[in-house]
Length: 150
Image (cartoon, rainbow, N blue to C red; front, side, top):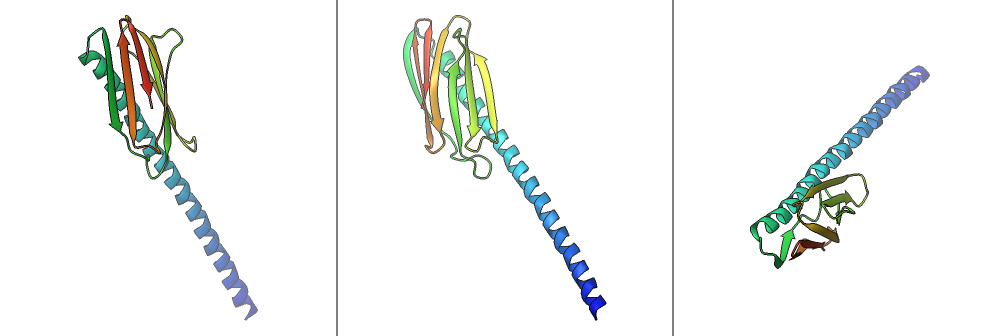
């Protein structure tokens, strides 16, 4: 009787250990899968902002103008990651940097691009996914371009 009890407890402990190990493996894979989806979606958002800036400046070629555009962005990435976006420019005013990261900082992406060598660019702004609408304000005055994101 005692040997049956010991055998049962050993088998039960081994089974429980396998369940715990398997659960840990799948939860790690699930987290990594969610982060990969969030990274792909964050890349797509950064590219969308880049394309909107480029299109606005290529379509409207007047020397002095103001363009305001609102973009509806998803409030979450992947399966529930909130995120922030920042826009800045290089010190020489030639490049625009757009960076995004999730609130938990597990996923972060950055892109940079230039508009044209003839422009001096000043870009600033911060966006948080708590708000569903991102606003891009582009002001062109001669060779100076100011971009503000909020």
